[in-house]
Image (cartoon, rainbow, N blue to C red; front, side, top):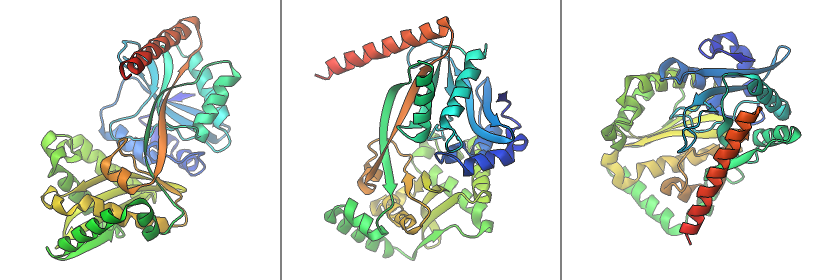
Length: 365
């Protein structure tokens, strides 16, 4: 069924939370506290629909969908999963073991929906993860394609070593020596303290500290900091409160004489985790506070319930890639929908994409 998203937090909140706890793949960005904070505070596309797949009273999966006016550079209307600028993974929550059933129901719903034009384009799936494999199985069963149309690889932190051993295995000795020297020089500037958020009473002060720290740097100058706009600041604080209430929030900071010079926001969704946002004081950039807080973040490796952490960073990020040894492929996938007109649209846009890809390859020779 397709439901309204505006009241979903109250209407299906308990079932949504249970789905998150039983999901085939954890995704903090698809959990109720994150999605609903975006619904409350951020500009929403029209239309925005929530596809809900139920089996009796059990929620099998959820997928927020919208209709996009363009497919890449082509003016082709199509159905896409809804991701806003602060959402770094598009994998829907799907109950473990029901991945194929979920996608079969979604495709049947879209095939019958007059509002669903073009094709289905899904952004931000973990390549060859259970949800991606379930989609491939569902499309294969009805003779449809499931095309990976874009791939990126971002850094991932994988458990298995103690923090110091992981650091030594992934960062060359010369770099470790330099970072140790920078940490010592920073300590000469005053009292340095590393803290993790523990007291709920500190949550909102820490939220304001992060917004101010991020706004003080290049993002503030560019107008892209969370605190640069009232709606994104409200989203951030509301979302952090929801994450904390759900037991998902992990915040880490390095203070110099009581003032934050680096802060990191993580989401813990066992067996995985997500590194959401980082901010640091550019006045102290010579001490690499962003790198130092990431080194402190390696202490997550001592937790027995976290097997990996997605960096959520851009591909080939110079700071993260030099510290984290694991890699996570993230893909965009396109699937044809039922009906001759929609199948024809899929065939045309995929032929165009393949043609452009061949031209790029020839140009790179």
